[in-house]
Length: 396
Image (cartoon, rainbow, N blue to C red):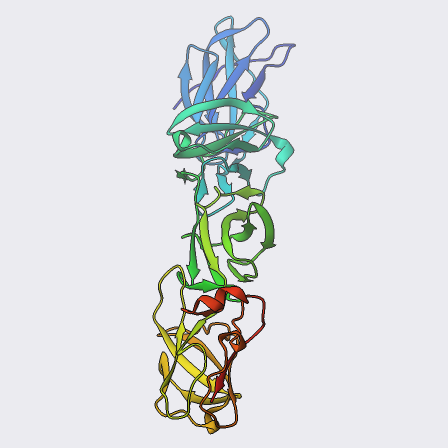
């Protein structure tokens, strides 16, 4: 039992608390100070009106765990003063900072990222914020709860934050850890279909591929943007030659690298060349051979077909009439279809076998006409008349 000798003095003693706040966070260090005008120690301390302890110092430091009421007594001239004012410590749970990162998902080099530190249940203006990278403080307390920067691979790390209340400097718990992993700037790849044997008039399909999700795509044809938003481009090619395609991906205001170029080589559909033997007059009963030749850059394998006056007569490269008759007179054309593919050539120029009355005299060579560039002749007279639109061979 402690005997207290009370001495009433004219000036009151004051018990103060630091931090001076109506609410103290659990675990916060609190200092109670007992001030007596003209007095000194020893000091007696009471908690919830029950004697706690005596000290020579006029302060009492505690780690707040629960709400309690405190009072102190000091000494003057060997006796104890009246009790101080009663101080109530109202202890609440320490708030925890919550850290988020935008954008979420995979982060690439050059992308703008923003961390946000939030003390939930408290107004933003109550707090100052501190930032840590791999446990090391990277900024002093700042008013801005957002921390933004341009991501590079060297900034890959574990980030946390904490808050300090402006009014009394009490601190929040450290936030959850957010791991930032920065990948190198992505570069899409382009696939094209078909990959070969592309002719004028064909439709090519190109796909822009990137492993991660959430992207829109931009397409470039011969360095000029031609499409947006889709990873698939359908393009009908109209001109022979090489066409260069590229794509890139976009997410928000961030663009990937441009893909490598893909060149689609477009060829004009070939036109068959017809040769005929013999290439002048033909007697009834003689053999006539018409040959269809297609030459293209890739030396494709072609399946040939012959038409006489619009009707099919043969599916061979050479069409042979073993015994010519007037019934064989007509206009002959040929064309080719790519073996194993979907392309057909243009139709050749027509070769006309013209019927004639019986006789033993051959017609002179100049009655044979050769269209320029489309029919091959071995006769010298063929070179003398290259501007005629068709080849006519008289059947005698």
